[in-house]
Length: 401
Image 1: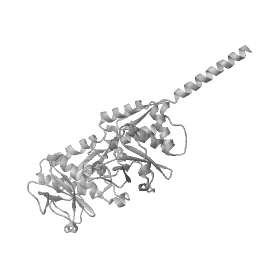
Image 2: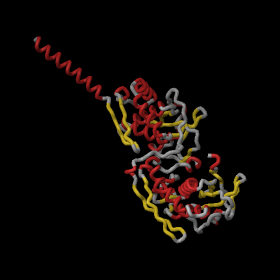
Image 3: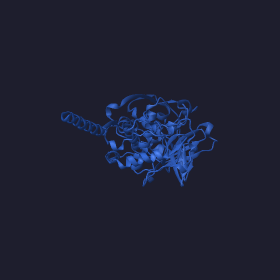
Image 4: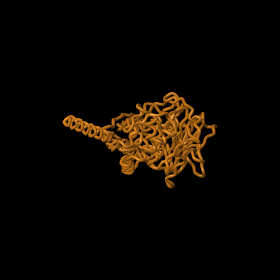
């Protein structure tokens, strides 16, 4: 009997050790590729939510209490360190948050829990982010004070909150979500910004070359531009931002290095007027035209790098690309003119060319970067626009950058 008790006691001890080991094994390391580096995570079992419950405010707060009391700091330290090292803008940092949440709780397994982790990590990063529940949906908002269109938002206590997960509810009217049920994270007050002033560094081996041809003054110019398909992923759910932010989205380092020095070389022996004419016609004729409605089924503004990559582009895309090229090569003052169905550019020269555009006491010359029925020169405007009212939606002055 004594021997049997000893055996049972040993088995119990083994079982306790096994269960203890199993509990410890719930803590794990994870890693994923993020642009040009591997991002490593230490995920402790204390922050893993296992309870499956009905989606409610009480459930979210219970999850918050558990994770907030757990060992989440190593994850936050890794996130903040990476953001600081790579100078990530908020939108790119949010992409890192999304991948981190996916590593902790895959979106396809439990969407609500995945969204909770995004909210928690963004809030602990200092952003004023909120969750609401409506029609059994968890909806994720971030405080933003910029001019953003085409995504749902709501006003709460005189602050505007943009919906960060609207694309997951394609057919839902999220503007009807009651603002009084917003769940916040204590001491999180920072505004979230959609501005992109620096593209991430990508692995050079992930770039592919795209060949472009362009005929100018009876001479064919060839370009082998390095482009990275990961750029498209960055802008998949990117909203329509105001023109000041949109026009100043830069190229990635590899694309810039394969393209801008060659353009500078091509125009180096040209006069300023001829060089800008060259850039205008490159932007106008090096790409196929298609409207956003036909191409995407909605308004979508492509960044300069996306325009170089895309098969089709419209007037917004070409205006942004032309602006970027002129700024990088000549850095001249410019304005963007928005018509009811078109946007175009005008550049300030030492002396105006053609029919001048006067804005705030300064004179600009039209530079049409999009194909028109006429082959327009600098200073000429399309006949259909001559008597049409326009609005200057962006003014660039190199002296006031």
